[in-house]
Length: 132
Image 1 (cartoon, rainbow, N blue to C red):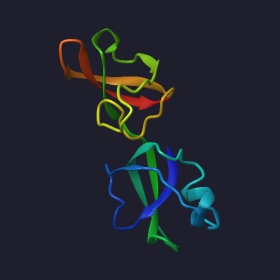
Image 2: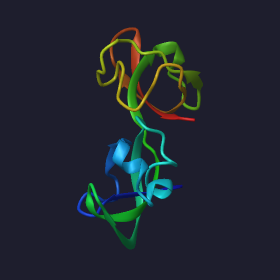
Image 3: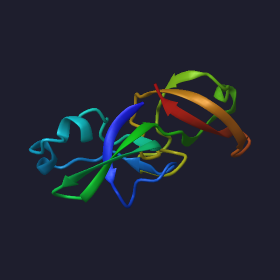
């Protein structure tokens, strides 16, 4: 579990977000807890919420949350659609498109197929992956 801070009104179990930061964040005393332990550009899912509230100059009231890397939907060749298979991510499109080049994944990332879902077409299958 990774701990970070999130706006009090947004912090709900199951909420997914892409980690982002600003120059202002680096000056904040909460930076080591809030941003430093997250990988910017990655997708996370909120797993737990603590009752500790802090004041943030950018977001107002924030709470301590526990997060994990989120599962991300993706399409892969059918022959690679095996639960537990680990591979390097190579986008199927230059544009950030869901399933082809989803937000939260970067070219060369090590990913693990966590679930095999339905056929996308004759050659491709939809899967869920996480970064490892």
